[in-house]
Every structure is written in structure tokens, then in C-alpha cells.
Length: 451
Image 1: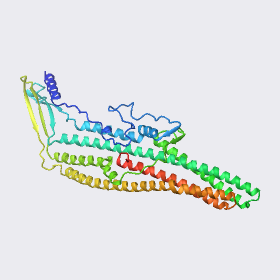
Image 2: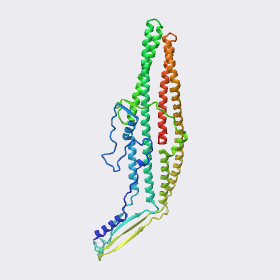
Image 3: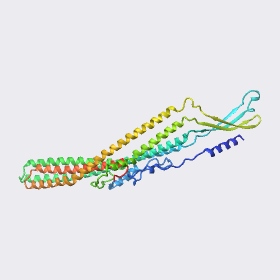
Image 4: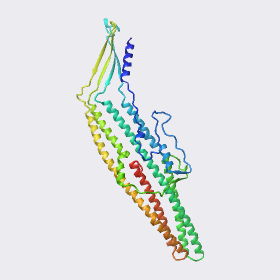
């Protein structure tokens, strides 16, 4: 009979107080910025499974690798990004836990047994079975759940920041490989030209048209070019390895990268890009951080309000087989501990977050301005090299080379014109690489294409 009453109490409690966790919006989609949105990224399943704790291995790219292919593979198979994705799922689990009600407690107490005379054995025993429940006052559970929700949102912003970091890393590595390929092509052309020049000078020396010292100069130039070509090819292999690491594939899996390296366009106005910073993940992350800190202040203030514990249950008297109900109420007296320290700490943390937000905004604005200036300078320099400097150097080299055949110029003048032309071509490639990497950095800062 006692068990029957106890089961009834527990069943009624479960019906009244048990709660279900509400489904919330997936922050992976809610926080995603425009930049790279067309590429899927690894997202862990909602329900944890031991059989799926990391993304599958990246497929091996073959042939030519485009920027779109590199981004698609890298974003899906990046271990760094996957680890941040699991942080989001862990924060969702903490949000679920924060919203759960405190568990009830059951206690049993037996009195008046094992004594003397009439109290011997359990004849006069009194048995009390109570169920106790803690009731949080001051909105603690609501504030705690809201703080956990904001912590989950913060984890989502951290994931989005890392996603854009991976996007920038892959894009930068891709443009570096394209630049290295262009440098290697220029070096190959220069090497062929040096070989032709060396043969031509040797023929003229043989017939006595030019002094032998010019053949020595031509051989020195050829050797120097061969060494430069080897170094440039080594740099290309290093760039390919960095791209392979960023994408998650082996360096020998793709033969080359393919893209419009010389496709450049002017940037939008700086004011427009600065206005876009308001929607950047860094700024939105700080907005969620400040709200979380303020919620924590409210939670700690609510901690000064004491909670109550209510209990109720039946008492059984063995002596006459009667029963009665007992009830209790327990309230802490906030005489000494009113949560003063944690309340003050929460306010300090909120004030600190406000200053950190200001510092973060100043830094990201400064980074944008500096990167914008570098990208604009690279754009202007690339246009000047392409439209004026390189055509002029090509014409000068052509005239000098033809004049050398006619005996009007020395071989040193030909070498000087040749060196000037190919140095300008290498500078053009370097400038284009600076333009592309800086433009990617700008888009990373604002979280959207710079259009």
C-alpha cells in the first residue's frame, strides 16, 4: 500500500513538472554571411553518433584545379572548421541542459523503532515518505537558459568567423599558386631566350664579329637564369603544397591551377566597405557577446533571491495503521551571502566586453583601411605596368636586340634591356598576387564579395 501511494505522487509530479526541450534555429544557417555561401561546409548531425565524429576524407582532385573546386573541397573537409562545428553542437547541448528543471528528491524517514518496552521493533514506528522540489525564484532558469542560448549563438559566430578564415586561406593559397605558375612560365621563357642568345653570341664569336668576352657574358647570364628558374620552380612546389594542405588533398593530386589571374577590377568606395562592417561576423559576434554579459548580470542578480524547497508526502503509523499527510517549506535566509561577489564580477565582465567591442571595431576598421589602400595601390600599379611599362620595355628590348644583330649595340645593352623587361613582368605578377590576396582579405573582413 505504501508503494502505491508513493508511485501516485511520483507520477503526478512527472506529469506536472517534466518539460521538453524546444527546437531552436540552426545557427549554422542563421549566421552565414554572403561570402562563400554557395559552398557547402561540414555540419555535424544534431544527434551525436560515435560513427560520425569527423568529415569524410577529401576526394583527390585531378587535372586542373579551379578556385571553385578548391573552395568546395576545402570548406567541406577542413578539420579546423569541423572542430568549430562540434563546438556549436556542444553549445546546443549546454543550452538544452540549462533549460531543464531541477530533479525532485525523495526521502524516507522511519521514527520510533528499535527502542524499549512499547517501542521495541517496528510496532510503534512512524514512516514518512516525502517528495521535495526546489523552486528557483527571480527568473534564474529563464536567465540561465537565455545565457546558454547566447553562448550557442557565440559559438555559431565563432564557426562563421573560422569558415571565412578557411575561405581566405584557400583563396590566398590558390592565388599564390597561380602567381607561382606565372613566374615559372616567365622563367622558362627567359631561359629559352638566354639559351638562344648564348648560341647566337657563340656563332658571332666564331666568325669574329664580336669579342670572346661577350660569349663569356652570355654563358654567365644563362647560368644565372638556370639557377633562378630552379628556385622559381621550387617555390611553385611549395605553393602547391600549401594549397593542397588548405584544400585537404595531396600536393601531387592536381597538375595545375586554372583561373583568370590578370582579371582585376576597381574596388568599391571605402565608405561603402566600412558601412558593410556592421554586418561582419566579428561585429555581430560582439553584439551577441554584450547581450550575453548583460544576461549574466541579471542571472547573478537573481542569485541574491533565495530559492524555496517544498516537500510533501504521507506518514504511516504502524501502531494503529493510520496515515496522515505532512508538508514542509524550506527558505534560505540571505543574511550573509547575497551573491555580492558574483554580481560585481558579472558587472565588471560586462564593462570589459564593452571596451573590447570598441577595441575590436577600431582594429577591424583599421585593417580594412590598410588592406584597401594596399589593394588599390596594387590595382593602379598593375594597370600601369600592363599598359605602359611592359609594352615600352618590350619595344626597347626588340630594338636593342635588332641593333645588336646589326652591330649598333653591345651585348651588355641587350642583357640590360632583357633584364628590365623580365623584371617588369615578374613585378606585374607580384602586383597581381598582391591585388588578389588583398581583395580576398577585404571580402573576409566584411563577410561578403567586394562589389
